[in-house]
Structure formats: structure tokens, C-alpha cells
Image 1 (cartoon, rainbow, N blue to C red):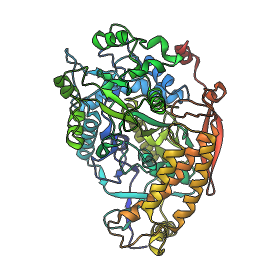
Image 2: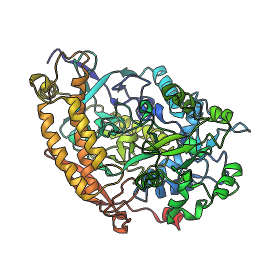
Image 3: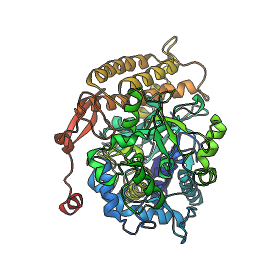
Image 4: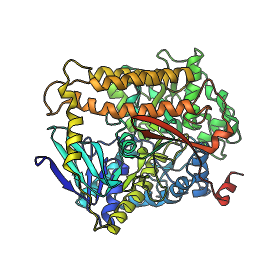
Length: 596
């Protein structure tokens, strides 16, 4: 054990996306010694894929906008399953976090009078997404990364954490390995912040990059935390379905916010057929009214293409099932016939260049074939809304890996403001907790390191076992076919049976070669996390016998009011995933009045 590399910090942040960087900056500002561990390279975080903007009620375009309206939009978009306190803090603090980014050097697009420009997105009553063309996430990461480096925060790149270590019931640090050399490393820290993102690589068609294997979700679960709202997986309505070179890649909601419309194979704008009763009062019900909104925005009845993402995704799925889909199983997203090439290239430069170069699709001249793609998980680690701490002392979570903020469905743009608001809060509180406990420094024992090492090396000791790539393929097929956008009890029961068989198969995973950069070995370790999280999604989805937000049941198509008072929590009981029903926290009367 003497050969194990060791490091010691006050706060260890796992993940270097927007939430992780913002948490690290906040913890450093609070006086803590901070380290960041990231699975990939610094600057490669999935946050860069967030294109549309940062949702914040700054009132730069609509003077009527304020935090109360943003709060109400967020709660309604989440079908009232959000933790009200998280939604409140998010709406109140998001404008300050955007202005803070500007002070640190972020270069936002501007209104004619010089204010930060804000664009429209689905589910938001007013235009409130602060943006940098269609590459807002990239600018956010650039700004936070530059600040973190300038502050001298230590970063460990291409390092994967495989286990959280506890001592006397509280967090003591983390164990991992260097992806290049395969050598092990231990980080001792009394506060660990998880900012590892989502779970999309469990699905066959996803907008997520390779890092999204549910690491933080599984690490927290195995450390004793609970996961909340895991049945709610967001399928972004507009991922490319053709050509194959760009399958699953996201087409930003900004395309629809800037005038793009959805058409079926008959050329008809079908979204007018799918306006839910809940949104009828504020949704245009004719093409003429919708087009007037795009041109002058003198009323608040928005085009149906800008309904919340879950509504649009279900509508696309219905059109495809009815035989009115595009040749490759999607629908058509058309901005070419509605905006000039110059406008499109100016407002959507990344979209234009990406699809022109990768797929030879010119979005200024032809429609795109799009369909739902696994994009975001609303579920995550259950945390205290004010501090970001889980039930495990010393373990914090922020960003997509944390649950509660978005309820049953996330509104576009709320993810970037979420990671800024709660990244900062979590980093500050993780640092404050250490300052209060300076005399109590945890250590990681040799026994813990030995056990974690043996688990990580197990695939090298098995000859002729299961191929990790085959198991991953089978897992993605199960989740795509049986726990996808539309679900039934029979299919999910079959999924749980299949997942149990896969869990038995991963005990026989076999890899060849050495520990030096070995992708097969890396995947073998990731599969434990992917399977754990997939089981949580399937069990929670089977338990919730209604349709709500990102969870649609063909056998229970209606929304059930009794389920609107409950959250489902997943916990580990030995090796089994258990589900408990827990009441929603009570919203104060002054906030409840906003919905009357």
C-alpha cells in the first residue's frame, strides 16, 4: 500500500463541468484547500454541449419578468414535484450568477441598448435565457475554467473515482485510478462534492458524451445516500436521427425559439394537435397567431413548438407511431423556410457549422430529421436545498447528479443556472463544514485501499469471461426498448429481469492487456455504475403508476393527483435497490398563492 499515491484536501470536487468548477471556486473563496478530479480533460465537460442559454429572470427583454414568474414556470414545468425551496433559491439567485459570470469575463450577446440579450425557450413565460450565440455552455466553461486556474486550484485530469471512503459514518475521501497509467490514487478529504453529471450512456440514443455513466449517482448510493426522482428521464425532443454520423446529437431548442417549426411527413405543423389543457391559455392555437408571436411578440401566447420538452417529445413520438414520421423515424424541424441564411448563420453558428461539416446537412436550405434523444436525468442525489449536503455527512452534490430541483421535467436553460446557483452554494457549505471541523481530519486506511484495489483489478483475473462492450450494448438495448420514452409495467418488469441477468454477467467481466490506458477495463468499471443507476430508473418507473413529466406510462396515461404529493427515493439494502415513498416538502402559503 505504500506505493499508492495520496493527496489531502479540505474539499475534493469530483467533476469539472459547470457545477464542479463553480463549487471549487466557491470553496476556495471560503478559505478551503480544494482539489478537482475529472474523468476527462479540463474543458471537455458536457456543460459545453449546453447551447441555448442560462435561464435567469433579469428582465432585460421583458420588464414584467421576475423571480416569482421564473419560480412558477419551473414548478409548473416540473409538474409540481420539484423541491419548492430549490426552485425558489434557483429563481432568486440566477440573475446574480449570470452577472457574476459577466464580471469574470463571459462575453454575452447584447440587446440593442447594451444589456445581456435573452432568448425564448420552451416552458418559460418570458424570454429569459442569457446566451452567447448557440454556444453558451462553452463560454460558461471557458470563463469558470479560466478563473479556477487563475486561483491556483489543483486539477487532476483523466482520473476516475471508483469508490467513496467513509470513516465513523462520515466521508473521509475517495479512491480512484489514473486512466493513462492505471495506477491507483487516494484523496483524503472531509468534504466531497459530486458534480459528475448524468446517466445517458445507459441508453442507445443519447446526446450525452462518453463520460456520462452515472458515476456520481452510483457512488452516492453505495455510500449510503438516497436518489430521488429517478423515474424522470428527459428525452430532448430534437436530437438528429439522420444521417448516422450525427445520430443522437442535440439540435438546440434555440432553433425553435428563433422560428423553427416541427412538421410531419405530410408537411403539417402538428404541434397544434398536442396542446395540453394545462397550457392552452398561454399557447397559440393557430399558425397565424404563432407567427405573429415570432414577429412582434406583442402577446404571451407562445407557439406550441415552445411547450415544455416532455410535451414536445411525446407529440413527436405520437406522430411517428401514427405513421406520419420522417423516412428515418423522426419528424422534420424546419427553420430554412422561415429565416434567411444570414439570420440562421448569425443566430445559430454552431448548429450550422456542426451539421454542415459532420453530415453535409445545410440547415439554411433544408429541414433536419429529428426525434427524441436521451438528454438529462431529473433524478439524482437527495440533498438539503440550502447546503447541497446529502444524508451522508460530508457528501455533497450539485448539477445534474443532484435531484429535486427540476421535479418531473427540466425546462431548457434551467440546467446552466442550476449548476451556477447550487455549485456555488454547495462549494461554500462544503468549505464551511471543514473550517468548523479543522481538528477532525479523516484518513483512508490501508484496508479500504486494498479492498478498492482488488475490486478494480478483478476483471484482469478472469479469463474467457464476458466482453464489457457486449454487456454495454445489451444494457443500452434493454433501456432503450423497455424503459424509454413510453413505458408499460410488462416491459419494465422484463427490463428488471434483464438487468438482473446483466448484473450477474458483470461479475464475469474479462479484460485483456495491461492497466496502461485500457478502454475495455475502464468500461468494465463503469458498467457497475451504469447497471446500478439503470435499476433505480426501472424500479422507480415501475412504482409510479401515472404519467407525469419525463415519465410516460401507456398503461397509466393520466396524471394522478395522489402521486403529485409523493417523491420516490431509491436506497441500497445490501446489494438490492429499495424504493420508498416520501411526502413532498410543504410549500409556504405565499409561494403557493403564485399558482392561483
